[in-house]
Image 1: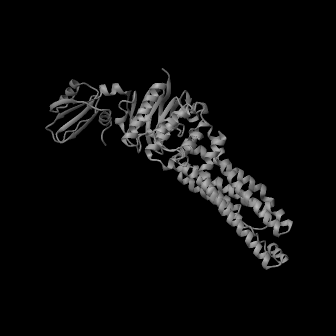
Image 2: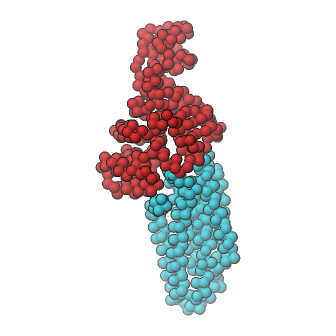
Image 3: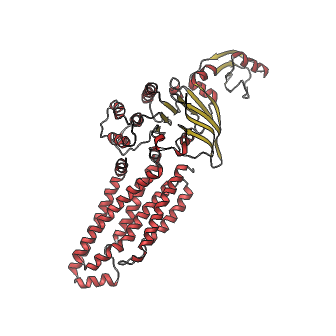
Length: 295
Length: 222
């Protein structure tokens, strides 16, 4: 399967502040790829570089085989982009904005846009500035669907949306991506919404990559173990077995890609006594927090 | 594609343009009534002598209207684009970035030219009604530096807004203010006729800097 996006050894700084170093990943055609990470780990920076809005300090970023900083108009037409906060031309009405974008895209599907608009119960003459955040997000999504791009880049689609609109957004995207074999690159702060949506993810930490993996493999191999400890100020260093650790009173949680036996051996080797050791099931959000930590 | 783009720019600035057109209209009405009243109160020869002797340009307020229009259209066209990250929407369109910037700037300048043409037509009518033909002849060379200055002011507003670095913005603002002020110093009928080519060159140079600033904006030096 071809790679739609190829990022190789990308390094970027803002002034002297390193954002990430040697970031590398590929997005396969037809896959739904999630870029996850806490605030300030470089998600939007990555998307800005990918869209050619930012020149990285070093490294290469290819989209459909072209350098992302100098994309040809034909390649740009193949990419749909949702800006963080569903930014659009708020002074336009629903029909004006559709007509505006239609002029730029040869494969424009007007009906896809108006199908979504019909669900909002808004008049064609209504201005975007008079609509709710949720409604504006649907306008932005409708415009992307009408553009019929091969790659959709969605930067924090969930910003400002309530649970209903978030669900609507994901449901629509899931149906669309699978039916049309589209590639989606998505970021969001609401990790739980992405659990059944993503095929693959990359998890960014400050200045580094924590993980790049298919989501099913991540959920199957990353585990949370809990135990009770008599030691009131237990501390555990991260190592190849223990990826993360947290303690509330005497309840300890450790996160690991290793199995139960290996974790127990690791603790024993460190002279840590434990009781009531067991594995806890995790959602994607639990796993994300387990991997990145709460702070 | 071009029509669609121009329509979007028009929708964005139409209210400020209408507002400016009203301001221009009020200024032109004032010029007309002032001149009409002076000609009612004094002999025509006295008025003409006074205008020529003291180089009183009776349509001097058009100068400020041209400057105000350049600044306002520049602000209303580009501030929301930069402030709300909407320039990213434009840069994402399947069109070359320099073409987009050119189209945006060309739309803004076309609106300014429309106001300038409106002013010129009305002042010409007023001039031909009350004053000798020579006043009409000197009209274009008198107002042209102001019109070019208005467009130059517009260009510098765009340059300042599309510059991503705040320190550089302040420097550019000072440079722009200095350059634009050159277009508005001194009054008199046809006084800057010989400098029109220089003014035009300065305006074209200012216009070309827009592309450099937009390039910096895209590079994202922040």
